[in-house]
Length: 397
Image 1 (cartoon, rainbow, N blue to C red):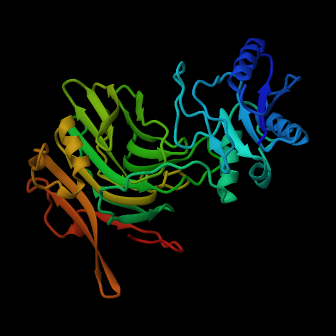
Image 2: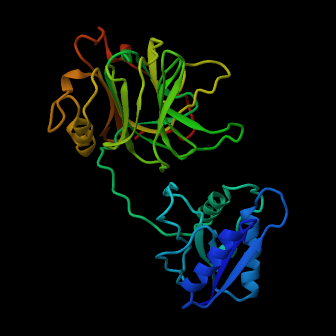
Image 3: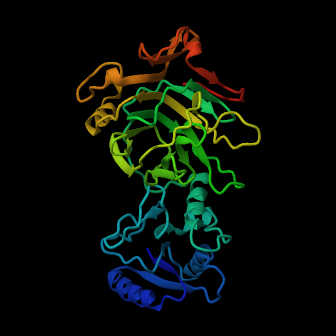
């Protein structure tokens, strides 16, 4: 089987010289053609169009499969053998801090000729660096062309919960959260895939928000989970996860007032921290699950679209071992101490949806827990409100 190595190039002679020297030695046992496609003008770089041109040359040279290869990536331990499915080969680097993520499909990518033709190659319309590889991955997905795969662990969580379909559907709760003192906030949820609005610079699904200068947890179109808050001087702070996919996940935020230390955990593991003295507290009467701001006309409320399992608030900063315990043993509940978790008496708010099937009907129980001091008199309807705007095909789980 004959391989075509196709490399886009412009004005990087040092990189090109080193790449050619290295790749010629590395591929000495392969039947291959090396195709360098140069952009000679001063327009923004168009990697997709250059690689499409290189592919046409590879066809004329009767290559059976091709590898689209950036010239600043030199192989150390790479198998360029023929594969019947597209493969992403740029999966590890030795001298770069480049962030790798599950859906990264650039750098070095290999295709059998027939499948690259099936998806009609790269788009020619991306000028400047980026996005042509994301577009190609989308073309593969829409054409049901399988790439390399990875096994994922099945979530341990029980998956009863509520599905919010955006469109101003949300849960409204009385705001007893005091961000001027120690606290922990935890929410377990699964966002839908982002539906991009091309009129916005980016899209954001806010799953939890204290309105005003929003203290919020969200998932955005950069495929990152984010916590955002403000201090009393009006400075915005945020902690972001690494690039991640939409999945059932548990986000925990802990804050220690004395030190100002705030930590974000994902599934029991710390992913970021900040030191923020004097968090801004606008003390609104309610906070929201599933939206970014109270109902207002002509305001983007960043409606969440996806599944929400539970939400908790403690009036203390949980220790790291407690957070890990909650993630490792999600079925144990939050109302009783267990294992490393010893803060049940500090739990002030607990929200969970439980589904019970009775014959052909489903009963949806909203369980809210407040301690005796915080709980107002009356029924649960006085504690929490759910707004579900009618929407075709909306579902509960």
